[in-house]
Image 1 (cartoon, rainbow, N blue to C red):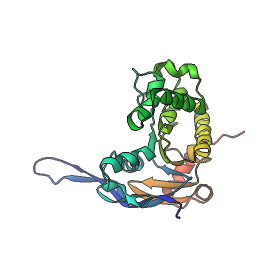
Image 2: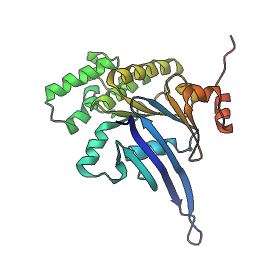
Image 3: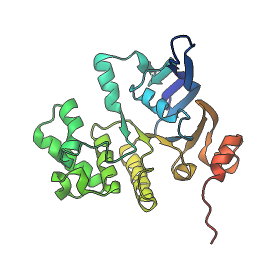
Length: 263
């Protein structure tokens, strides 16, 4: 059986911008005919500056955005054609960790309810079973059980991101899309969250699609890296090969922008 979990084929997302009554609409090619595969158990990073199409690609995989053209095959089935119970089942398997660990959490809900919500909506577990599952997930992401009844504003940015990670794990997904999950955190906390994600990947047999604008962030966690520029893939390599021998000018510029510390 193939170890390919996703096949992205000639994927496009174009936006039409109306410039006025007597002017031809402008077409913005946010994602322009990209193709790649995601293999089970790997960390595939998609890197590029703001506006390159990486987050739009993630939104199409999540079915938040509909593609203009192309295919997104998940375990052989085209998700662009899913609806009803099939779409619900798919969304249980593919979850997301958002960039901002505060705005992605309901400030009026306590931690326990935030993590429990996917289970309450998508499972037939009892309240007791749900609470037991939530406490287990809290432990796995490094949270104390007494935090169950606290609100998001009572936590630091890194702790709030742990809440988001626990929520993403609630339904036992196969794939987690990490959309700039550490970019809003202090540098001192980023490494802790990245190490946590690596530990959870091994423990829960996860596949990650990791979105970032910063090659230094994905350097030590990626199996493969895709570099996007103006809606297109300009380079795709195993991480070590990309850092040792970047071929595209844009990749070279991204690497040169990584701060270097002289000791």
